[in-house]
Length: 341
Image (cartoon, rainbow, N blue to C red; front, side, top):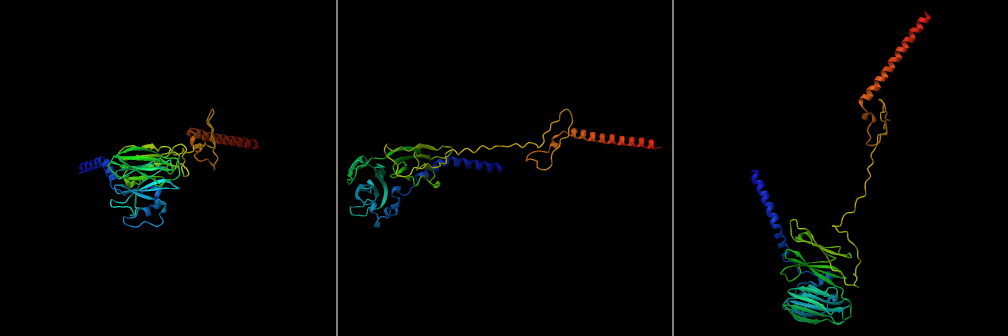
């Protein structure tokens, strides 16, 4: 009975260890909502309305010139005080000029992030530092250009790199004056699976994998991930640095990351209490006297540390002294009686 129970427990443990990576991969490839760039977080309720519904009246910050770029998407082209922007929105295959375009955001390109991908198309903002930037959309190897409205010239402050994170996933890491941004991609998918930035720096535990931005508001943010189970260690890499002359548009503060070593504790001083009286026998047995009362904590009575023979010898000496005194007094009394007689 016990043997059968042990066998079943071992079998279950082995099955769990073998299935952990597969379960992680399934969780990673599960369908997820279309991501919304954090730079439009304030406008998400306005821009992500259901198809067919009307847009809000106070969404002027995100209005622009919409152009249909294929695959059910429009690019809303702007070049105002914020600089050149192309908001990529999914509107469906039936969209035509004049229809509502303030729908689901699936990508964004600016001077701070000049590239994006969605639904099989890649987007690149070219001539971004000039007064007349151009959006280039490439689908199945065919590129089309869409000029943006003219605006002011400005420096391109963006850097990016790609990182394989295992389990058929990759991360695209961007750095701009808005801070670090990570797009998590599943192989074969048309849009990013998850987006991480300063406002949302880490995946929840329910995501099934570990992916997080370390020090999202720091001077040198990093990226950590773990997509496979077992003893697989955390992967780590850094975000690309901002181009020279570019500065963050937020206050740089170093976060207390969980992987930083904890501060060393202050050294503790151990005080060893000594006996109140420490008398060593010299040349013979001596009586060790310990004051009663305030004995220091941890100190033992000195009488307990002395040899029993010392105490016995001292007692015997006292008896001998008293006996001698008694004999002397008795002899003195007898001499006094004879003299009187």
